[in-house]
Amino acid sequence: MKKFSKQKTTIIVVLLLILVFLGLGMYWFINRNQAQEKADDKRNEQVSTKKVKNLNRSHVLIVYFSRSGQNYPGVNLKRGNTARIADEIKKVTGAQTFEIKPRVAYPKSYDKTVSQAEREQKNKARPKIKGELPKVSKYDTIFLGYPIWWDDIPMIVRTFMDQVDLNNKTIIPFSTNASSGWGKSLNTIHSVFPKAKLKKGFEIKGENAASAKAKVDSWLHDLGY
Image 1 (spheres, rainbow, N blue to C red):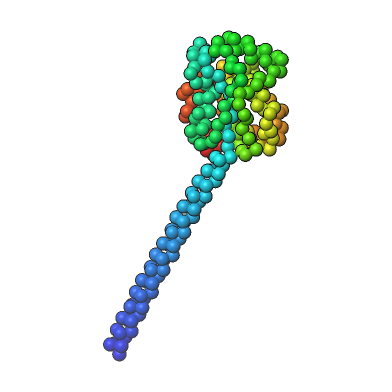
Image 2 (image 1 turned 30 degrees about the vertical axis):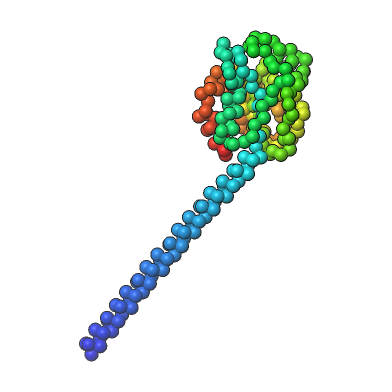
């Protein structure tokens, strides 16, 4: 009788061990599958995000006007301040660019350019742009860059704005200035394109444009680039 009882106990212990090992095996198998599923989901999400970003970038255009030469405060620029910001935006986003160039260049002299800009604004002039304009219908998002002249957008940029339709598009402004901030420029954009979505822009003093990389990158990161 004792012998039978020992055998019974042994069988029970063996069965319990088998159940324990089976349980551990099932636990390991389930956890491994869950971990694999999470890894696959994360990888698919990263691929999907990358595709979306690439798709978005292919529908982004950087349009800007910038002036080189003598500039405030008494420096001579080979590359204009606004152009420097545009260069960094292009580097980060990989977007296409279009530089607004006047058919007749502005004077190299800072003072002469200031006087000409004032006359253009008073006369509501529309200086002619050199070359063909981009087909903005291909793009969903437009980065629009300009210096602030007499508290507003330069009239050469107004020429561009008059000749394209940016309504129902996303406009992201960026600007350089002496000390006036945005001036009236954001109101001007809204008045010309009331149906456009105006996103948070970037403005900086022109004299700080050369060292603005970190600030530009942070701004673009907040926008999702």
